[in-house]
Length: 402
Image (cartoon, rainbow, N blue to C red; front, side, top):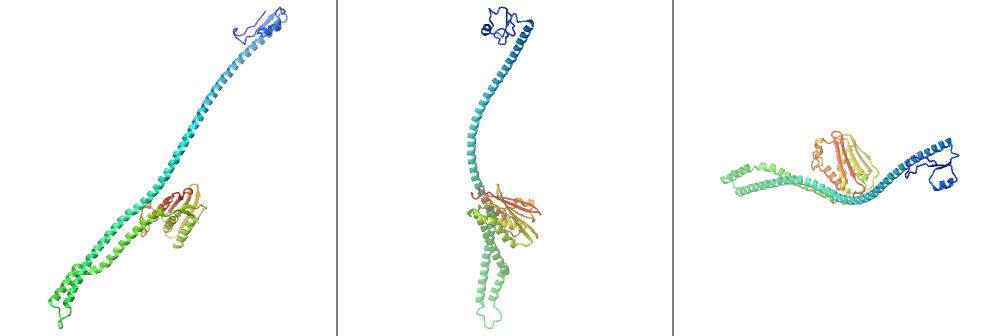
């Protein structure tokens, strides 16, 4: 009996066994194949040299294929193991990601709540800032006016003291005249010249007139009265200015058409200025918003009036509106003399005026305060000898909440 062995004998599934027998009766092929792990059965009579070569070659090839198959199987098993490990890692990662997402959602909810609280606090701070700005503007005006009122009060007090002294001097003079009148009335008949007592009284009167500068009193007395009246008028005007700014926060908010306000103000001012100055308008379709109507109307009037007055002879004042996500924007422009850079930091100071010596210097200050009190923004840019642009923005959704 012949056999061909390939590879290890112990527990080697790749082993190829070929049975060669000369007594097939004692070892029947069917029984041998079923009961033993052999791969081929050859009788001695049929196993020639060629058949033996073919059988061995076939067995060796089968062994080689089994070795390669085992190698591939092992590689596949290794890959499956790595794949299972990767799947396990991904499952763990997905579980961790799920936990992280839940934690992140809770964190976002917490952050959102805190953000909402912060936004609410910010709105309160913005309201306080607007109020503080208005208070600051009033304080600026009040501080200037207090100085002016103190000066005016000193003037009035001094003038009244001087007037009182003049009154005392004039009373004394009148008393002297009464004495003189009692002395010379009734006149003596036939007397051509006053007696010695009369002459002395007249001399005393002339001396007193020189001492009190009676002629000077008659000249300066009306001027003192006029100066006192002007001082009182300054005090009255200062009080009115303060009342004007104090009233900004008192006007109730109401739904208003911005375009309608601008058209009204533009038409009124266009008629008051030279026909050589044109008014160019471009009004977009914008919604009504809640604002302090009269204060904003006055603010528009001050800004557009400044634009007209900035143009010396011929030019154009432009007024336009637009609406987008940022809100309603009003743009007022002129091609006038502009504002010098050294004056830009003072243009919103009360009573500051460059090109209008007789102006109040409160127009821009009031306009900005009125806009800010309605939760708007106010931006002014200017170039000397080229012109000025004023951009005002009101939010659409939150307008009127303050």
